[in-house]
Length: 291
Length: 295
Image (cartoon, rainbow over all chains, first blue to last red):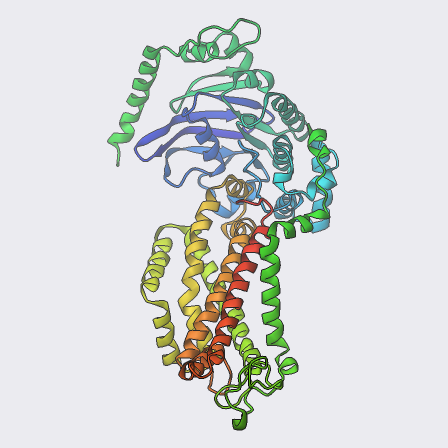
């Protein structure tokens, strides 16, 4: 069986800084993978590279990204656009700003459906109503006629989730979809993603820095630091027996309800030093090459 | 959570009303002034009391009807050739409205197209268009219009062409900057992630967000177009001499301003109210149209 997503030795640089230093990652169909790491570890960049959303000043130095066996980086632009939104979807980080402020919710879902499925205006609206019902929005018809600023953040995130799963995607990249929401809404959103994923059989790459979220919904996880994969495996294994000291430090930094709060134990400076010097060593060939 | 959000009554039918309310007094006063202007232009033959070209030298330089020596038949008096000032003012509105509508719209079309182009492509395309705008704006606009009108020759078309050629930069500059801003917003990235092409993204996602801005610009531009037409007809290179315009009326009135000041004052009042009306309408519409009500 071909992997849904296969990233191989991906190196991405922004200017002189290497943000991804040879990342490899494989996602099987229907797999839910947590991608964790601290800020700047490159986890969002990886998601953006898959979606073709890298900032203009970023360059892909080497590596491959294949979706269902087809190389996304070699693909023609029109072909890639045909996959985006239909087979590869994104649940964005900030629901407050990810919907077009001057278009009604219905028009936004409708334009997605018409763009990819070629539905008529009326059929798109009917389908949009079904999609909103699927994400447990009451009175979907009314919500379709509202502007984004007229509905709450949680509702907006539901709308975005509905849009992500609208065309039965093979892969959904969830880019920290819960960070902008409060804790109770977070839980509902996670349950929703889990339910829709089962129904549509999509693989999910769940980018987050919240290990609690990973433990809850991801079967496997990948730990990223300074643009490299440090550890990878079944979530239960990694969380119970972290092999890499960085993962251990990351785990220790997670606040827990079942033990009293203690002073925050920072990641040992010596460890960070070591990780960065390793990362630097990995950069050497890239710098020696054509610069 | 969904229930909570829905509990707040956002009545649908009141949205139009709310929009009009946001526009406030500005919207209403502006709309009224512009309506008067447009109606005067459309209905000129029906409402003008006299033929604007009909001369009556026996009753030249009559003051307005309410002043001493005024004639009730000439409500706002007559000019030095005995033509009805009111009728001439009404007929002048036709030229003003035609120029304002056509010139501003054409300038907007060209400016928006180039602005979107520059703002979305960036790189050398942006550099080329931006430098072109810079060079263009270095010329004094009125001087450029006068030169253009003089080169192409007098007439309504050349006035419009002169305004379009000079004023597209106004739109291009603002649209370019706003397109760049909008493209960095998350919704633009989200639209790209659903596989929209650049053209579709600009047309379906970015352009609707520019509408409130464009409405304001368009209204201001119409005011400017009226002013430019006045300037050109004041110096005598606008439409042909037998068509009344506010600018030519000011030019004629200037020569006898000590004997008959109203001949010059009245067209000036018309110009000021038209421009103020257009600006107020633009402002009001921007507030009324913007669903997010950014302030």
